[in-house]
Image 1 (cartoon, rainbow, N blue to C red):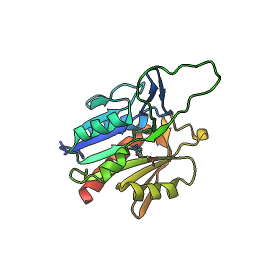
Image 2: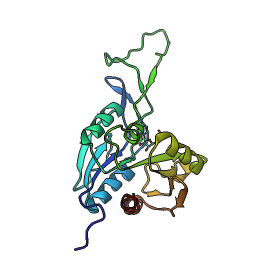
Image 3: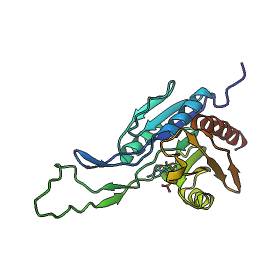
Image 4: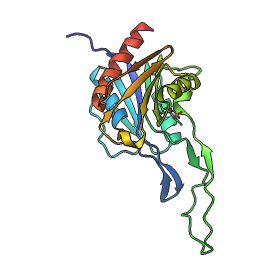
Length: 222
Ligand code: C5P
């Protein structure tokens, strides 16, 4: 049988949102479903890769044939990703919370009857994509990031490619009207240094299969 395109390769995929605790019963989150990231993990496994999927809290099933590590917070996601190194390819599809509440854990916040709302202080989370791209000793040969934008999609993706130091950005327009966030279809643009590919709208599973093909080609060309 013909050799599969990612046979013998190790791949990490991050997927889903993160949940950042405010107190023991509350958290900050976002609308990521994990559908695109999970589909990429499944497609990489189908292409013969040894896949670790690091997933935030999602309501979809673990993909078959993939090692899935479940986490809640960005800090836990980073730790799980580092645990899975070294890899050949990292695809960061998770919608990691940029900030987390600066709470000491502690007790449930209570209304004190004065009508005053508590101050929610936020601190910056670690950037997983950035730390993989700039890893001093174990940088994956290919690092792929996502850019969920609501305007100037390509321009912002280019800036993100530079700032994060990754090899490819998969950019999509997530403005409400597109229905992409949580939906089953996606329209993406692949932005690399000096090139842009605009892909037609297709199902997230097809985006995943084609992306895995593209990434396998890029790995060979490297
Ligand atoms: O600039 P922005 O953070 O929106 O870039 C999104 C990309 O960065 C995605 O690939 C996302 O998975 C990754 N990211 C990350 N860790 C963060 C924030 C974003 O890996 N803390």
